[in-house]
Length: 157
Image (cartoon, rainbow, N blue to C red; front, side, top):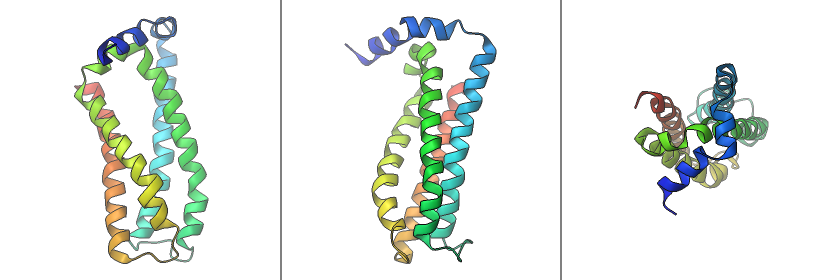
């Protein structure tokens, strides 16, 4: 089965039909939940990355800050995944042809790998090497905001 056929079968499934015929306010609510999930992630990511860049929150150690913001990232990811499915399923075949959709998911895959490997390693140190910390923070911010902008672009392409 091709990817396009898979996307078409997802859209035309029973769940896709139910979600596709739901009241528009439900769709708006799901979009709001999706945005809330993204804001949870981005706020935590920005706080930690600003600390890595040497701005603010210097009274708190980097591992303490990461420990305090990690639940926020997990809640945000859960909200994004759940609401993203409810957004995707009724319009899957439309998303298949949208380059912004694919850009978003490529960036998301890259940033999640970085987030749970390099970023985790760098932020577990009390005082990581400055150049590596700055490069990691810059990369993380660019990728996470790239995911957000590509997600926003989906509606315009």
